[in-house]
Length: 430
Image 1 (cartoon, rainbow, N blue to C red):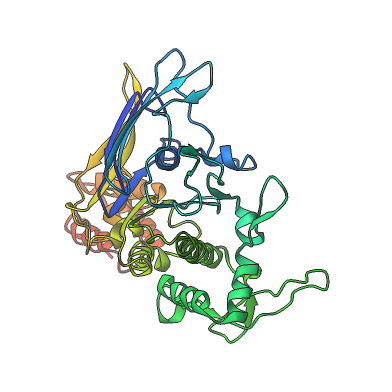
Image 2 (tube, rainbow, N blue to C red; image 1 turned 135 degrees about the vertical axis):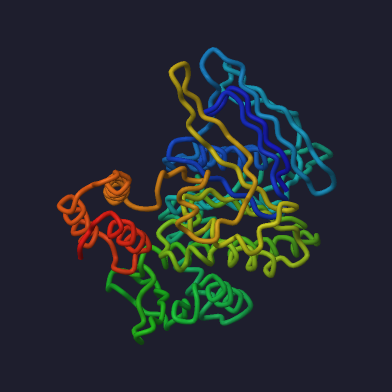
């Protein structure tokens, strides 16, 4: 489990420090302040490889570089298979690489990473860890499985042209034809990640979608009865399907590899998810964090599970209010702070305080909006409030403003009731 991360002169800020919760970690902040960067760093500190270093086709997950003319440092602490490990890495500009302790790195357990654009990375201690030959540690196994968005669906091919992963479409079809443990597991995960009875992702019959595509294509059975090929499903459904597939694929392959090695399965699982709400309808956003945690904990009941996710969603933050626990969870917020003297990015560990509803989260420290309303409506209400604060605003301005409010606000809007009461006291005639 990732316990601590300290950065100096690398990334958007001069210094950042995160002390992670052992279960749930939320990272918020405006675009461009470093949420995805922090997840890339978290992946690197546990696997010692940048995602794009393994799969150069990726447009993200590139190697982090220190600030110009500065000595960059990455300090991190995580719980390995046997003990707590602490590292300090500096950047060697001549080698263009982050240095660290030589030899075999510590085993952090199973590490999964879901990127915002739909790619995935998996580091499996049973399949990607170093092995010993004649008493010497050598890393001749694949360093990790890193899928671009399309490779999640169509499969991953190694540098030698040999397939190393079948991809979602072929694996799903194979699991469904075999109707064994993997398929039952996958069907359960799909249901568990669904947003409720009317939004269950039910599996339909296999089909073909083209004379030129010989693959059996999985389908989803929609509430209206039709079986829709998964490649034609909505972006939100494809996001959930991909999450479910990678969870099942990674764990099933880990079980098989552990059995071959005659070793126990991993005692800890870390899942990094960038923009966990990506493409999801608000009703799905309200349930996704809890669903992922439950799936991971039930998938690996004997393992410790840690989720680290970046989010832009007030629904996601509101959804964790009932079970957020400061003893096991943490919230980190990135802000852009500027004045007449300086401008900088600051990371702040926040105290998680329930807001009660989604609109209150919009105006909280997580998003820093001046109002939960649109800017145009917020300006209109500001004008209305300024008008009724005048000692004698007059009937004509009050009537004109009243009509504007009626046109722009819902008749049940609380502000409209308050406005009417004060405006009538000031002379408004309905």
